[in-house]
Image (cartoon, rainbow, N blue to C red; front, side, top):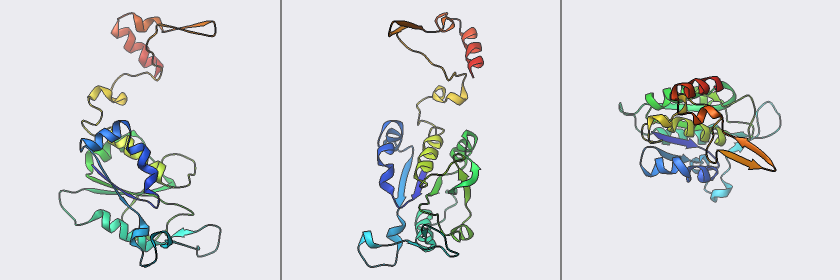
Length: 219
């Protein structure tokens, strides 16, 4: 799986992609992440920091809008030359989009080779980009964020764990096994401020049938 991220702030991804499972997945070439900053696709010959990609909205209102052309060129770069071996999905993050869930993560992981994430900022991106490319509008929840970078990280995490070998074993996928949101480890009795907190006895019984039934109840 190759992720292509269109973002004005690519460094926002550094800490998350350079830790734990996703870092290992990148090193093992299970996934690849490419970045495309719209500032790199402006016609301005000024310094990098002066390459503006935003302007005032038509119709008035506060804030600034990211211009269409730099984003269009960034998407074109991400898509590159067409190939029958590549199956590309372009995702546009918006609070009004369809809610993302694990079912979609499974579909994306199994159906596509490349996913392009368009990360908006400010008051959004010129809507004409959506007229030029076939995009799927998605949201990660009924709330508004300052940009699309966090949703992109959520999708990268959720989709990547569906890719064979990223988590190591099939049993690591909680959604594919009987799992409880309440989990316990050593010690058996936790003492804190004069009180004792015990592991549920059923988990110590060794009876896996009863344990599975308990986990189902917890679900």
